[in-house]
Image (tube, rainbow, N blue to C red; front, side, top):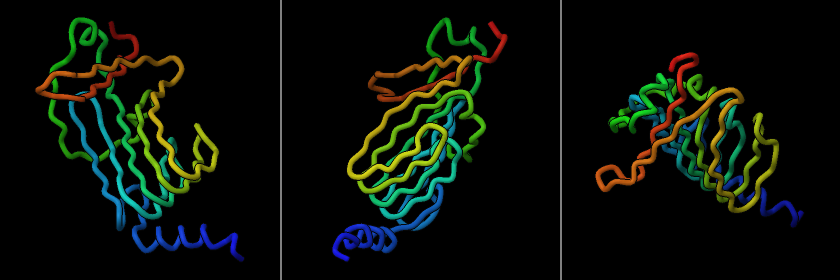
Amino acid sequence: MNKLHSPVILLLAGLLSGCAINGVGIGFSLDETQNLYSQRRSIKGFGVHLDTSASHGGLTIGALSTELICPKAQPSHHLLTQAPAASPWQVAAFQPEICQKAQISHRSLYGLALDINPYALRLVVGLNQQHLIRVKPGESLTLWYDNKKTNPGEIRLYTPLTGVI
């Protein structure tokens, strides 16, 4: 019976502190934004979180911080000459189909996670941090990182439209 105390206590603590599905629920905050070039979904919180998305599915118990950025398709000739102008992030519903070609994801987890998705089938225990760039075979991705004082840390992603030069 002693061997079961820790997982049971962790599960009860998670349930009492927060419970959410895809960032919607108690103890978690969901932030979905878009600009002209990209869309972003951030989920932060503590408790039990179930992610049902095809690319990031899984169950997490503990502290979780995730961010997913997906590019919108742009004609290639706009990307070859100069970095596009920054555009403000605005609240907008997240569109998972945009993430089919390419995505950048960040996840920081402290607790227990069961990942069940096309990229990973695993059990994670403890502290785990991931920074991933995924590009579907046959696709391309352009990333601009703004390191100026006016817009520090701004990331703009693009996937060129097929057949457009």
